[in-house]
Length: 192
Image 1 (tube, helix red, strand yellow):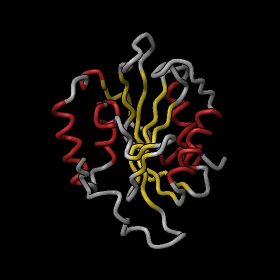
Image 2 (cartoon, rainbow, N blue to C red; image 1 turned 135 degrees about the vertical axis):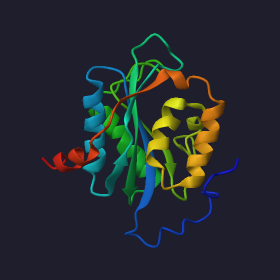
Image 3 (cartoon, rainbow, N blue to C red; image 1 turned 120 degrees about the vertical axis):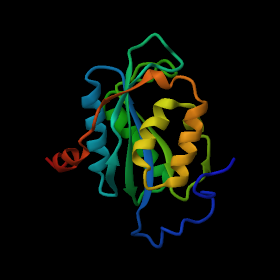
């Protein structure tokens, strides 16, 4: 596999010490209850961790379900975070957020209050039974690539790869812009 910004298995030149933060891209989705509130609470929980800062978020997109179709539409977005956490600890925190917000795992690709997926992490290539980074199916999902496109404008090689992949994907018509996501207010309120 080729990687648009170089091979992430090579050391990351942006990481210089234990206090350094690296960028991670997290996909969020919800299709139960107050979907927008669940996304807001999940971003608040990410930003509330002392070793995670939400840097920017995409717009929110409403998308048709993929896989298990007998369920409501999803709201999806991508958040970019700067973190000191390693991939395993970041992933564990994301799963805690899902649990805290009432995620119940019943049907694969089924309805959920909230879902958080670690899509990319600068300088990280990981393939373990618990976690694969980059996310193994992100390039097959318009509902991931379209919001990812919103937040990677400063990454021209990644942006070009996303555009190229979107040209080949079916299902783009099932991804509709829902609203912008005012993440600045999320950060300001996260301490309250």
